Length: 136
Image 1 (cartoon, one colour):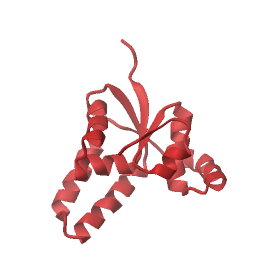
Image 2 (spheres, rainbow, N blue to C red; image 1 turned 90 degrees about the vertical axis):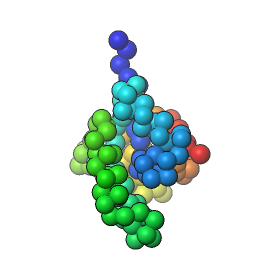
Image 3 (cartoon, rainbow, N blue to C red; image 1 turned 45 degrees about the vertical axis):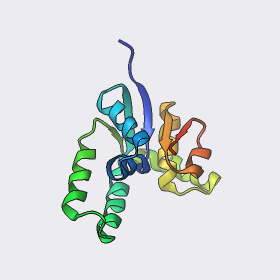
Image 4 (cartoon, one colour; image 1 turned 60 degrees about the vertical axis):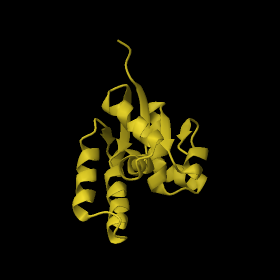
């Protein structure tokens, strides 16, 4: 059996799949849940998703209970998390070179280290990564 292809997902993909229910983002998560793809994320993804969910709750477009359920469901996905302490030095250097945030560069350097595609809805981030899949 061939090992699943590695991909790195950023927070925008998780939010689009879980909250906005976009077909393209949901397909990426389904492929990971079905173990067709080997999904990787820096551990900061859960804080970024939680921050986005808090904005939905504050805007009263989602309840706090629904936000908690979404976060629980995303945390249950078979995603391989990578600690920031391992990504931060390279992310800092990449941020200084590209002008992107260190947060965004954590995804970029993880994708580079794994020789994986980065899946994102962020055009600037996608443009700064050698192998990126940009969501519509």
